Every structure is written in C-alpha cells, then in structure tokens.
Image (cartoon, rainbow, N blue to C red; front, side):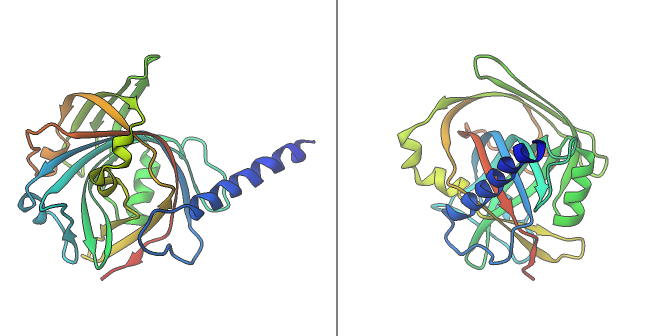
Length: 264
C-alpha cells in the first residue's frame, strides 16, 4: 500500500517539471539536453534601483556587456526562500534543499542572450554555498539569515554575512505583497527586469560561463517594503543610488536549470 500511495506523488512531480519546460517566455530555445537541477523560489522581493551604467561596467568580466533599458542600468537586491532544490531524478535532501538566499545583481548580455550577473549571493546553507561555488562558479557567501512571516502578510528578512572570503554585509527589510496588478502585466520594465533565462559566471581563470534556466512567466504582484539596513552594494564596491527602488513581489515559481556552458 505504501508503494501505491507513493506512485502518484512521483508522477505528479515529473508532470510539474514537464509543465515548467512547456511554458517558457524566453526568446531563445531551451537546451535540448535534459535539465540537471530543479528548485522552487518562494516569497521573493525584487527591489531595483536605477543606476548610472558607468558605475557598473567596470565590475563586469571580459565578454559581458551591461544590459540597459533606455540608457539606464539597474541594480537589484532579491531576498527569497529556496526550497525543493534537487538534482534530476533525486528527491530533495533534508537540510540541504531549503534555505533563505539573498542576491545582489545586475543585467547583462553575451551575444544575443540577456541574463543576470550576480555580484554576491548570500545563503544560510554552508554545503549549498560550497557546491554552488564549485559547480556554478558563483560568488556564494556564508550568511546567517532569519526569515519570519507575520499573520498580516509582512515578511521580516535579516541577513548578516559571516564569510571571511568576502566583505562583511548586513541586510534587513520588512516587505509584503499588495496583490496582483494589471499595470505590472503591462509594464515593460517589470518584464525586462525579471524575464531572464540565464545567468553568467566567471571562473578563477577568467573563463566566462552561461547557466540556462527555464520557468513559467513570473506571477508578479505589487509590493511595499521598509529597508532598515542594506550594505550589500557597499560591500561590492558599488554606491547604492539614493532613489527609491522599484518593488515587485512573487509568491512562488518552479524553476529548472542546466549545467553550465562555456561562453569563452
């Protein structure tokens, strides 16, 4: 009886993965080889600041061009919860598959593929940090992160970087969704900031890599946030603009990812 109860769950999982692949909004074809990693992103806050392009271009490796919209670059801070992280055909691993994450990012292109460049990614799972550094050449940092959610929908997110390989950084914010908005669905900036189907990373020898991802269109909602502390940009050598950030919220998104491809 136990095996019979387990079978539908397995079928449902694979069906969900196939559906994720079948509903992209990407502008180029997904890799033809099987995806290698599956995950779910939950309770995301997208906070984006407009920033002068010249403040970011010098931070990028050779082979990447800063992506701008109407001459404007953007710097993003994204706190969220990672869950259900697992390799293909394997179940989630307790203690390794669910953890909060916080990233500082901007937007770039290599060839015709628009993607994300991460300055830092803070996470509270030490094993996941080391796997991501080695397998994806990403600047993951050890951090102590506490996330609490109140009954009224407010999410309190506090992070303190503890990694000695990186500059210290602290981040504290309260945020919540204000609900779906027709204006967001029609906003070209919201789509430009979030509809990104690859990331770029550089290895220790200067090699440039691309990691493809795929997911359904972002279910974006309006958001409000109160920032108490934010030294992520300063720690990365970037001066955070004084302008108010553009805010979006997303409750959940299922994602699949592929192994890296060498760009140059």
